Every structure is written in C-alpha cells, then in structure tokens.
Amino acid sequence: MELTYEVEGGNFSKAGHASSSIKKVLKQLNVDPKVVKRVVVALYEAEVNVVAHAYNGIITARVEQGSVSIEVRDQGPGIPDIPLAMQAGYSTASAKVREMGFGAGMGLPNMKKNVDVLNISSQVGVGTRVELITYF
Image (tube, rainbow, N blue to C red; front, side, top):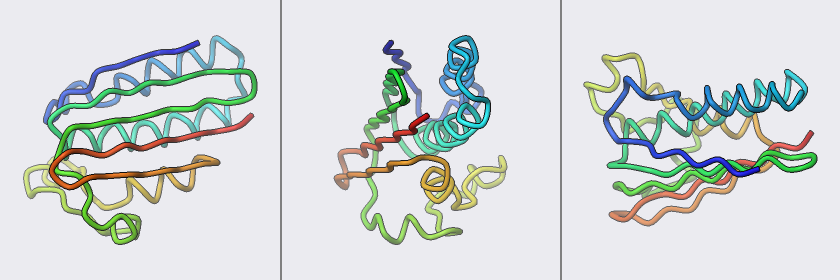
C-alpha cells in the first residue's frame, strides 16, 4: 500500500495531517500500537520540519509486510551540516516558529530514536530527503 501527501511550508494548521492519516491506516491494519506510535512520532517530526523550514514537500509512505517506509522530500533551504542538525537542541527555526512552540531542536533526534533506519540527504538551496523505516 502506498500513500502520498503534499505538505505546504508555513501552514502549521495542517501540520500533522499526514501522520494522523497514516496512524488511522496502521490501526486499521492491526499494526502493533507500539509500532504505530513510533512511526507517528517520527513522521510528525518530519512533517513539522517541512512546514517550519521548507517551501513545500511530499510524503510517500509504503506499508508492506513487516515494515513501514516513509520518504519525505522537500524543496527548501536544505541542511548545511547534518551531523550538527542531529544534535539535540540544535535548531535553525525562526523566532516566529519558536513562538508557536516548535523549533526546539528535537525533530531529527526524535526521528532517529523512533525508527529502525534513518537516512538524510540534503543539498543547500535545493532541499532535503529523509527516509524513515520501521520494522514490525
């Protein structure tokens, strides 16, 4: 099964739409609730990162026998230093984003903590690709 969602940069009112939708699908497929929680936490973090930092993005989720794999591609400023961005508390979020309660610098660390595989590639001035895989 493959599901695709468009994410609009800056539109915090729709942040979480994809993760909520995928949560419902995984529950309908009787995936272990602990796995569902891990997938949803990681995806929500990725989704909010697109909203907070990029112009737009596409989320593609594939649910297969024994795994959920999610690809998040965005068009945006990119991540100049991925190892630095992986450090808990590091954030490039704007003051406006922080005032809304986002941008604490825990997005990428929370993704890593909640998935079995995390791959990030980014090109400054072009965008970022995040791959999240969770096995069950």
